[in-house]
Amino acid sequence: MNGRLPEDLETGCCVVGGGPAGIMLGYLLARAGVRVTVLEKHNDFFRDFRGDTIHPSTMQVLDELGFLDDFLKMPHQEVTGLGGVVGDFRFVAADFRHLPARCKFIALMPQWDFLNFVSERASKLPGFDLRMQHEATDLIWDGDRVGGVLARTPNGEIRVRADQVVACDGRHSTVRAAAKLELQEFGVPIDVLWFRISRHAGDPEQVLGRVNYGKALIMIDRFDYFQAGMIVPKGSLDGIQRQGLDAFKDTIRRIAPFLDGRVEELHDWDQVKLLTVQINRLRRWHRPGLLCIGDAAHAMSPAGGVGINLAIQDAVAAANGLAGPLRNRRVTEPDLAAVQNRREFPARITQAVQVRAHNAFANIFRQEGPMNAPWQLKAVLAIPGLRRALGYAVGIGVRPEHVRTPAIRQ
Ligand SMILES: Cc1cc2nc3c(=O)[nH]c(=O)nc-3n(C[C@H](O)[C@H](O)[C@H](O)COP(=O)(O)OP(=O)(O)OC[C@H]3O[C@@H](n4cnc5c(N)ncnc54)[C@H](O)[C@@H]3O)c2cc1C
Figure 1 (cartoon, rainbow, N blue to C red):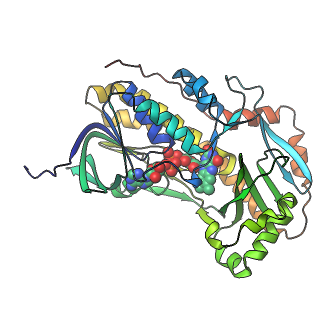
Figure 2 (cartoon, helix red, strand yellow):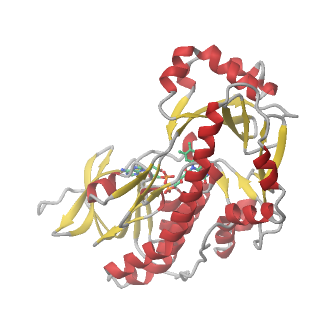
Figure 3 (tube, rainbow, N blue to C red):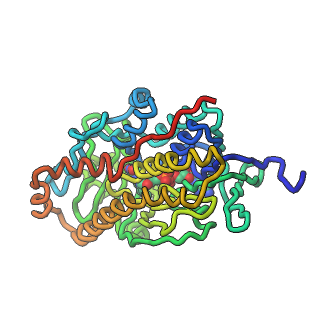
């Protein structure tokens, strides 16, 4: 046995986490001829909390990879503008119809469909190995260099040795904690209560959110039901529960009167999941042998629905920078630092905007009665070109990435 467990693995790149960042990175590296093992702790991608937005710049990446047309054949909705309703004032804040991209819309699609789509294509590549129900629990160190990860599997613990580990394990990243990388937290005043409610034909069209009576409700259309999120002050769930489920249902009714009747589908607090919102960022995204990207490097809030796009763009940049060194089995610290240098700026700018957006919620929470749209909102919306500019900021984002890795036949 030579001290090895029978199931030890050796790979070129061990990607921890099969979310948008990890699956896209795994695909791109395998396509570029790198042996890559993706570890995902769950046994499928079918989870509700992931967010459903596929942005124009992500679809541009799919187009560069040659599978946009197939992607668009899957059931989805095309949202050409994002807006909301404050009181009874309905507005569009971001207009995607003029974007310099093939898809001038956000595609709304359950994230598990997107992840299944990319991972199915990846599984056809000889270098790609996706291991479900493999949870990274710790790092393996060779001196001060990360040499792999320990993973819990249904058959016990295994060691995955790798030339390079990339942490894509999201905002509660185990890997970054094990690496003791320093995290900067930016206070977030909100949490989200996440629940489903059925959708009927003739319901109002998709909007970003409804704001009234000191509350905000996000509703994502998933064909026969809405994935709904009530934005509440951080730490307020206990108080909301003490007021009772009926009071919670009344709040939903007041913000979205067309849901009257359907709110009765909520009969237990178990149907309402608390999603804690965080914004944070690593000062340094890497150590020798380890790189963090996506939410593991910079946790994004749901504000603007841009976190998935940033995660994908990080993956493209990481693959562009690391595929060559990984093929030569010589990834250096400057290679890893170059990925951080390229992606930190977009993360910083986007998080700064999210922090400002959260501060606006603090004002909303102070109001109790029926709300009217503030004049400031109307004045800002009247600025010429603003909707197009916001459309670009949300749909394409800061520093969009393009696939530069080759497709290597093996
Ligand atoms: C309530 C809420 C709603 C949101 N809605 C949207 C939205 O609509 N649009 C949007 O763009 N963004 C949204 N976001 C942000 C978005 O979810 C993230 O920015 C994005 O998912 C980050 O992708 P990622 O691949 O880096 O990480 P994640 O999507 O978090 O993926 C991490 C993956 O790693 C796996 N994993 C975790 N730990 C381990 C481990 N130890 N070993 C193995 N696997 C592990 C997880 O199971 C998961 O599959 C939302 C965030 C919140 C909190």
